[in-house]
Length: 128
Image 1 (tube, rainbow, N blue to C red):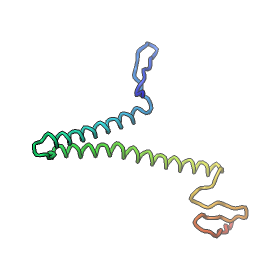
Image 2 (image 1 turned 30 degrees about the horizontal axis):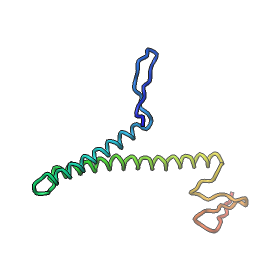
Image 3 (image 1 turned 120 degrees about the vertical axis):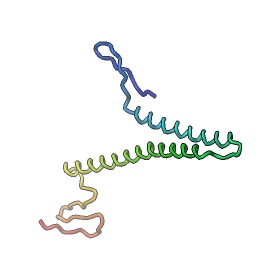
Image 4 (image 1 turned 90 degrees about the vertical axis):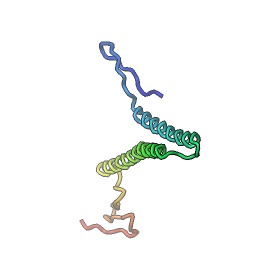
C-alpha cells in the first residue's frame, strides 16, 4: 500500500506526492486506531479499577471516539452516495439531450405520437 511517492524536479530536488487514495487510507486508519484506543481504555478502566466499573471520563472519551468514527465513515459514505446519484442524473440528462435514450422519470414517445408514461398503463395522446 503506497501512500506517497517521490517526485524529482529539474534541480534533482525531491518532493513527496500523495497518491490518489492516500486521503481515504489515512482517514480510515485514523478512525480505526482511535476506536481501538477507546475500546482498550474501556477494558483497562474496567479491569484495573478495584470496583470493576468504567470511569465517566473514559466513557466520555469512548463516546467521542464513536462520534469521530461515525463522522469519518458516515460522511464519506454519504458523500460518495450523493456523488454517485448526481453523476447518474447528469449522465441520464446528457444521454437524453444527446438522443440516446429517454428520460427515466418521464414517458417515451411512440411512433403514433402517444406518450407512454410508466406510471400509467394507458398511453396519453399528445397534440402537437
